[in-house]
Amino acid sequence: MTEFYFVRHGQTTINRRKAFNGGLSDSPLTTLGVTAAQEVGQALSSVQFTQVLASSMPRAVATANWIMAANEFRAQTPLQPVAGLREMKLGQWDGRTVAEVNDDARVEIYMTDTVRFDAEVASVIGSETYRAALTRSLAVIQTARATYPTGKILVVGHGIIFLLLLNTLVGVRFSDLRHHKIVKNATVTKLVTRDGKNFEKRFWGLPAADLSDFIQNNSKK
Image 1 (cartoon, rainbow, N blue to C red):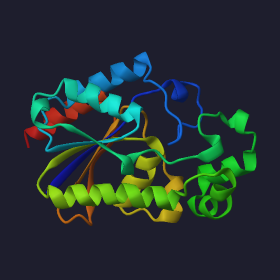
Image 2: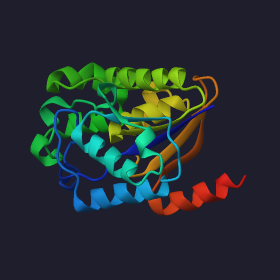
Image 3: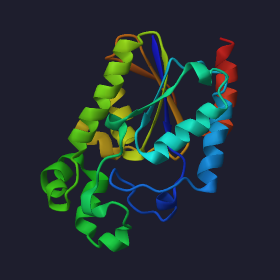
């Protein structure tokens, strides 16, 4: 069985502005973002990861480094930046707020309808499609699972990528992906699989405060 621990990066200054934090923009973690990543690291400090994968964007790499700084086995698990986990590129919207974009109709489609966004909006604003972002991130997970069929893998990534990826892994249809909520910054989702096709949810979007108790309680079972 392969165990995947998915962690969304800590809060960034762009997140704090409530702007589009896509794959063409980046900004440092805030103090809150660093602290939250450190707290996740403490909660996961006793987990011996087989592999650590992080989006190659600086905010994800920084989060992964803060998490692994507390890990008892960090010397044995070097961090691997992966382009396939980068956040979805949002073209002209990247780094801008909804007010700055000033295109309510297209933003509404982006927020609610993966199929219409890909067909009607992505090319207009120079964005990556939802389908393309999902395809490349799925390939990363499939490769990791095939490489480590009994491993524990830490994956550090982004809100939209995880919205697409995690929900697809547990069986949500592509057309329904935008009906689900984005996991919050510096939260952890654990999925496990025995065959690389069927994924079971162990926990979803847990902050560090809840994570430690969950791990301790389940390690005794």
